[in-house]
Image (cartoon, rainbow, N blue to C red):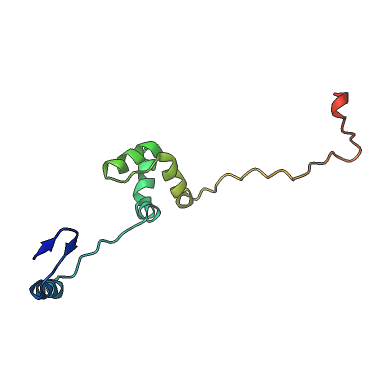
Length: 113
C-alpha cells in the first residue's frame, strides 16, 4: 500500500484484499450482557442463603467483589429487599407549602418573641 503524508492512496489490489477479508470474516461471538440488577436477581437465591448462614450485606459484597462484581453492601441489600419480602421504609410526608396553625391558635409576631 502506497502512503503519502496526510493522505492515503490505495490501489485496486488493496480494494480486492479488503473485499476478501470482509467476505471471509467469521461471525463475531457475542457475550450475553447483564445489567447489575439482573445479575444480582439471578444470584438472589444463593445470596439469601449466605445471609441465612450469617453473612452480612458487606461480607456478601466482598465475596462478589472477588468475582469481579463491584457492589456495596447497601446496594446489595436494596436490590434484594423485594426478594426477601421486605418493604422499603415509608418516606416522610412532605410538608405543605404553607403551614397553618391549628384553629384557635394565635401565632405570635416575631417582635413578641
